[in-house]
Length: 397
Image 1: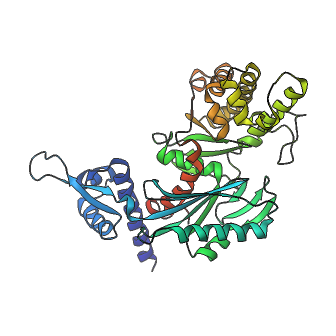
Image 2: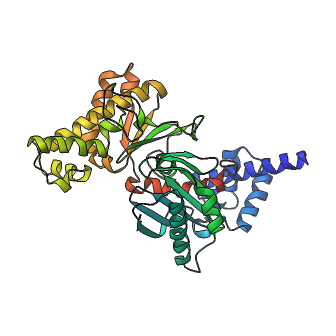
């Protein structure tokens, strides 16, 4: 039995290597797949035949001959499967159905009701998900599963929301309730970590196997990819950059501590500073314009105080990132989320602080970019949670 299990795992591993080679290099010949994976040609021939039979890959065209027959090229059959991604925000929930290349086929935006407790939230999100599944066209390819991105501390192994501070939830068994409701495989992950996955597969991290990704919205979340693997740490707390202690006597954070980075450089921090300046009469913004979007708009229209607010937030963010650089030394940092839209004001300030405070010239030159997937990163990353099972079946075991 052990020998059979070992063979099965090896076969699964070889299939994932073949699929990864085809995804990253396709259209590609069987001979090239064998070279890339270091598998024998007979193994590649047998396993690709299985994958064609399962409708996961297909023979797309003939390649250029180097003498002899023209090679048949293989490609992922993107529309052979469907995936549902759900991005649960503080006020809204976004749902999307994608194919195997993360191309969105349908999407839906739903306002979250007020005053949901943990139990009513589980019931409500189950109803919303079921309704979305019912709307999928009958002719759509089969569903592989549902990936869920949500803020807070998520136990990625059990799919339990241990703490979602902005919603006031604790110990919500989201994976369990959604799987029971939909009869689908469900994977639940922190939204900043799904953002990192989305950027690794389809965005600014495509060519990097190690990087740090920040989701800068009302708060600041983080995800860290190390050697092509999402790093969680001992208790899924890895890369919680927003709760890095920055000030001994700072403002109270939503987590209950004082002086966290997100009290200085998040959307909430911008609003707090804007309110102070408005009260002092130095910022001429209407009350409903004192959020990140309103401040960015004012800066674009030449408001000097708004520009200063964004640049100061960038400096605080840079202080947090130099700590992360000295701790993790990532070659790449990706900034995503709503606040990152103000990259023209944030990035110069961030880079200036890093250049001034880095220990070495190479650390000072750490690449800092904004997310290519923009506001879609967490949603696409949620789909990638399921997609990754196809390429590495053991990744969420």
